[in-house]
Image (cartoon, rainbow, N blue to C red; front, side):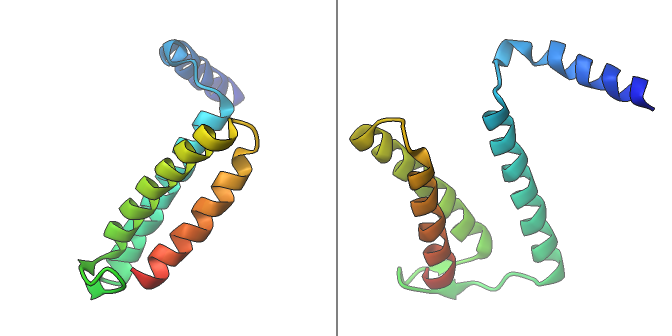
Length: 106
C-alpha cells in the first residue's frame, strides 16, 4: 500500500512540477474543494431557497459564497497594495469576518 501511495505522489509531483506549487497554494485549493463539497452536500440535504437581504436582490448560498470569494480576493489585493505582503493573516481574518457578514445579511 505504501508503495502505491509513493508512486502516486511521485506521479503528481512529475505531472504538476511545471506549476511550481507551494504548500500554501495546495492548501488553498484543498480548502476550496472542501468548501464546494460541503456546499453541494448542503444543497442536496437542505434545498436552497432564495432570500433577499441587505442588497435587496435574491441570493442563494452559492451566490453568497461567490460574493465572499470575490470579496476575499479584492480584500487581499487591497491589503497587499496598502501594507505589503507581510501580515496577510490580517487580510484573511478580515475576509472571514466579511464572509460571515455576507452569509448572514446579504
